[in-house]
Length: 104
DNA sequence: CAGTTGACGGCCC
DNA sequence: GGGGCCGCCAACT
Image (cartoon, rainbow, N blue to C red; front, side, top):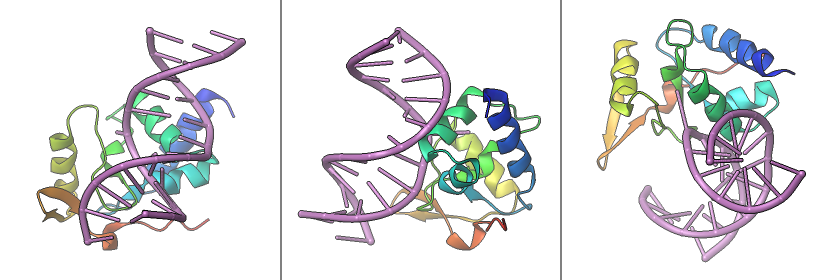
């Protein structure tokens, strides 16, 4: 699997994410056969908002995670997709019910 | 080429 | 339930 190969794969998968749903880094990692850290690394180094809605990728524990262009921006995007974000002790978290289950 | 870091996940305390 | 530690892969220095 080449560099661009992984990127294209992740792009394809992300495009499959239904509106109003999110996925965890771990899910993508499993599909790509890599580690969650690697997924995050690839995304931040290949941020292409025109084709890759990376804001739909969150931590498995429901926390927002990170975003190169500002976590605030990510949250805004998620809410725009109809995803409700709960304020848990000052920490923003996403409800588990918004997690999309990939059907292999 | 080798050591560190980082958009995480899971286990343990 | 919250916080800390280790393991994971890829990119950077």
